Amino acid sequence: MGNEQKNLGLTPVRTARLIASLLAVMGMVFLFLERLLSAVLTMAKEGLSLGLTRYNNFTGQFAAQNFAEDKKLLGLLKEAQALMPTADSALTVFLIIAIVFLVVALVGLVFPRQFIHVLVAFKLLKWQSGEVVEGAGANLREILDRVGNIPLKKLAIPFAVIIAVIVSITAVRSCHESAKLASIDSALDDLHQHTVAYIDAQKAYFGKAKVLGNAKALQLPDSASSDYFDYKISSTRFTATSKVPLENCPAGSKWSVHSNTKGLFDKELTLYRMPPKDTACIKLLPNFKKIGRN
Image 1: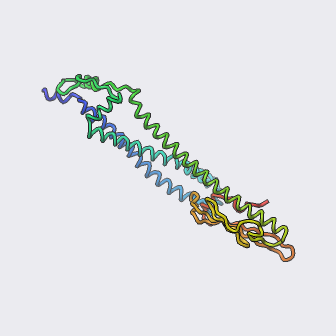
Image 2: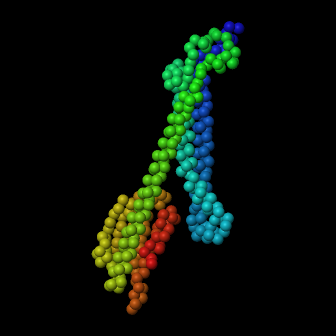
Image 3: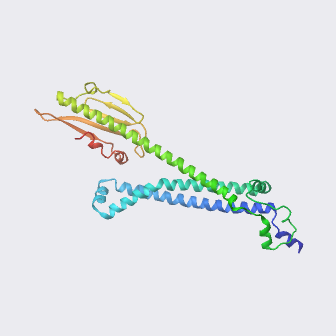
């Protein structure tokens, strides 16, 4: 009978292991949610890629412009694509929370005495020494009353730390995305400015000489380089070759303007603007064929 009463007591070590076990369960729950969300995101990204590829070709664009169902579906795909960065952030947050809970739980299970001292030291747990000891008979209500008095305000501290970590990760990812968007905008502005400079110079020279001008005649460098593009001007062509990937548009993609003339006596200047064939590159600057047009 004495042994049964003895087993009813919750010692500091048992309390530490109980708290650590609860933390481990919470960690496994978050880990399960992270794995589940990861699988769902993988399928969602594959579906988005297939759907957007479908609407990038001629028949898809025609359907999106002329059929209400396709237009609505394309809008939903774009909305889902915009949510992907947020879902990736949630995935990272769930993984970090799971790791934190599991690490703390492991420490609590391996070093229960030190763990309970840490909880008491940080005033996350108040242990009334001597009131709950092994061998002291107690019913369930008495045990719960004697386990310790956990102040809710102080218990909220670790959750506040986790929330702060989540906010920090989200802020860092947002800054990274903003910097990425700013970099792409700068690259496209750079391409636009060099293309306009060539077209305007070729138009002006042809208006005076009625012949095509090379780089020297146009008073432009025959080659130039920026952080994003290598530019070359030959006797009839302007070419911009990307040095870095721009979103899904790979490095080495080429935008060009081919100059030509037509007519025997009354010659006219014709300019053929040619973006890369890759649809991801076309999406970056969809109005490239209209650059320099009146």
